[in-house]
Image 1 (cartoon, helix red, strand yellow):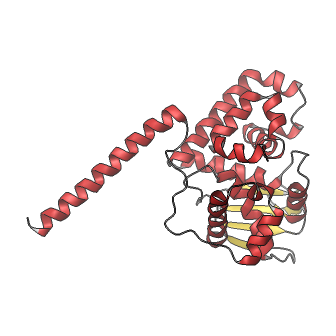
Image 2 (cartoon, one colour):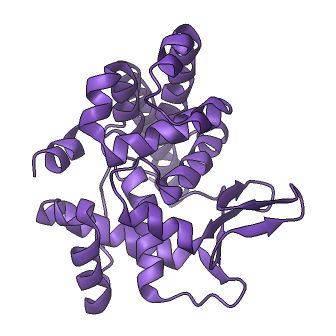
Image 3 (cartoon, rainbow, N blue to C red):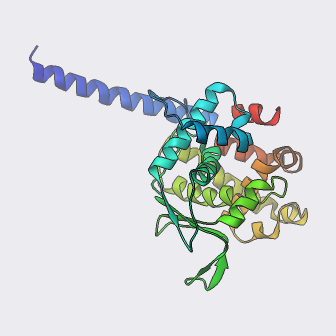
Length: 272
């Protein structure tokens, strides 16, 4: 057989196999609301010893993982730091530890997703504290700006959200949730579709039970702002007080669990 025909057959075979895999996964997502697989790396990146020790000592989520998933988490941290630009403002100095902390918030959110990096944002701007926005003419603690592909944090408020783990306020989780929601509405990969489908289901649940949800006073008033803020606030509860959220609002808990593909991960997090 001539090489040109072999090449054509090979191209056809790859195209057919890709189509078949996409069909199978689409069916799998329909029935189980998660991709067939999440973690598959031919070469896993590792962090320098200093960063890895910092991760172990300061990120409880990481320290509770088994060794296999710690390696996956470390790989994703390294990739995040490599792929996004960190920008200093108002004299703030970004250290390697700060990059690890910020990356950890994002990796926690996306740890159940196969495609975890996004092009929805490409830079992270950090101010030392609340900053003034010429657009809104107000001071902000953080924001996601899709037009500028930017995540912005006040480091003071980010750190408070990370250190105080029982107030259900976490700036990193909050702003990255906004970015992932925007990504889910635009992208077509398996994890993005699941994320945004669950987002829509949560909003439908909110519309049906709005009065009882807000009458409970369980969520802070900021959750009433709009649908995006509602989901971002619930996501903060999911990471800071998952057992309480499950007890008070089991349906919302289930939606977030599916949204993030977190069933297996929760088994490691809640029972340690």
